[in-house]
Image (cartoon, rainbow, N blue to C red; front, top):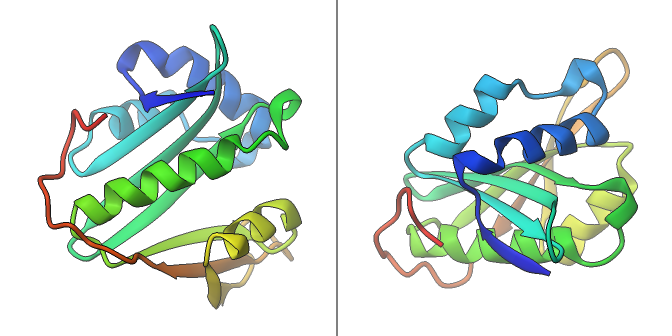
Length: 158
């Protein structure tokens, strides 16, 4: 497993993961992903096997708060620790940016993701009713980041 910062050249592979990982109504567009790849105080990480992008995660930081915006692992590659690896690197990046906490939203019916986040120290702090559609609530989860390093943060982190 090789984790690295994504580049614009990874956009097509990320879009393939998006299609495999989310229902059409929940997918991010190519323009949305392009904005994440080029945005300030954003980090898009990819996980590669020997050749292909098999997982992606997207993070942002604003002031002292980081956010995990998206994690997608190729369905055929799930259960191999890729999401955990991406989350760990994203948390390190957020700490280096000066964040002291990370937030995320997850579907209440996504038990695998909720278990991953709980094992990484995230706890539910709120619920957004019908966030993913009628009857599909989102849980807002939060995790304290242990060692903010107050280092430079921005594009080009790897």
